[in-house]
Image 1 (cartoon, rainbow, N blue to C red):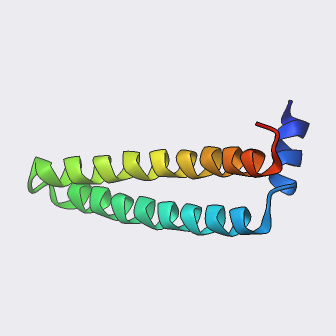
Image 2 (cartoon, rainbow, N blue to C red; image 1 turned 90 degrees about the vertical axis):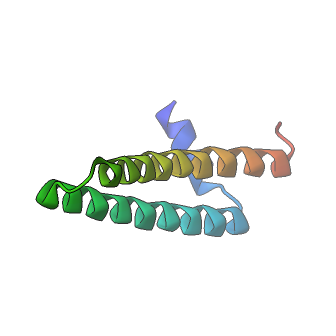
Length: 83
């Protein structure tokens, strides 16, 4: 099972790899921004809205990261004619 997943990542189309890499970079940057916001909230304890913004951004970055991976694999399979 794990070997199949690793082989799927190795056999991706070049354009799909580039899109997935840039998407995951974006998600990482979004996650770092959210962690900075959460650390700022932890150090200052000003308003709860800062915590909500940081937490929502962190969840959003995780969701986008998973979507980039899954959609990249599915689009590659569709292009290859497997699905």
